[in-house]
Length: 405
Image 1 (cartoon, rainbow, N blue to C red):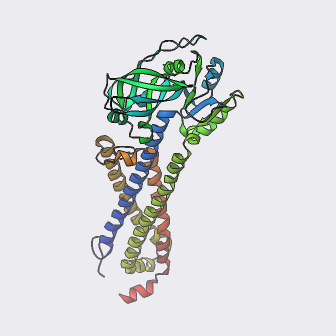
Image 2 (cartoon, one colour; image 1 turned 180 degrees about the vertical axis):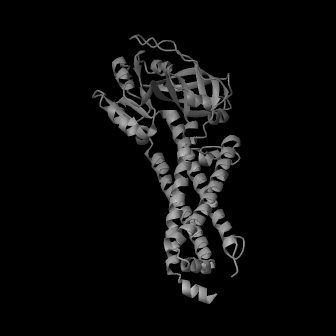
């Protein structure tokens, strides 16, 4: 009776194809999830960098950039900071204005920030120069202390107005029936690739807005609150809201930018679709390989049954062989995917158009739990899929197979 080795007949090439299909499926799944999660994280981080996770403002806010002031309340801020999950609290105020150069007039949003402002995001986005030098206001009831004239502008604004670090930036702000002008000094230039924000925001001293609006040193436009875990944002927001007096209200970043975060959530359906298709491809590949192996070994199966082997023991042999192929495909796929992710993360080989994607390169989020979940899920689905072709072993008759030989 001729013997069919793994490398002969159909089973050898088909086994290699099955391994390659599973490996390719794992690579696609890992890369898709890593890239989409990286994209979601990158966009979320940029939006939060400009506006924090939560903002506390006056309940009577009029919806434009002329804010109603609220007072710094040390007791309230201390209570908010004690809420589990709250990482940081800072003060801000925003005022619309126009920058006038010799050639152009350009509208901006001046975002005044306090000395304790978390500048990590802007430090990472800094192209040249330095961050504004800010000092804490005395916070008494007198007119706000003398502010810093330093401002941080985006590369978009710098390009359009032909400004560079060290230049003076004459800015006009409407106040009542007239306007007030300020001569700021460009101390640095940043770039986040988030066009909606880069085109508008200038970062400077909170005390500039206090003086322009004739507020005292204890009045601000609002509080910005950062949390430790974005996934617990709504739960933390509910606890903070319960602490606020009637004249203050809280908005989360998802409420401030609903369209953007709805779009990011929609990307999760793409991840689900990709995972489903790739798992299906892997399952079909291993089912096909096992069916061909069973077909090629029909005589051997019949002989084993004639010698007293049970269907269960014969199935176990083929299941072990197929499981070995599955494991080999998954490990190869994990290794390739990990290498590709590390290469992209370190050298940013794949680039993007910043104007279209709000980032200059393809982001990847290397999550070990994601690797483990895809590995375990693919293994479980493929092994479960083997039960169908393995059941055909019970239908092979020893008498018929031996007689046919």
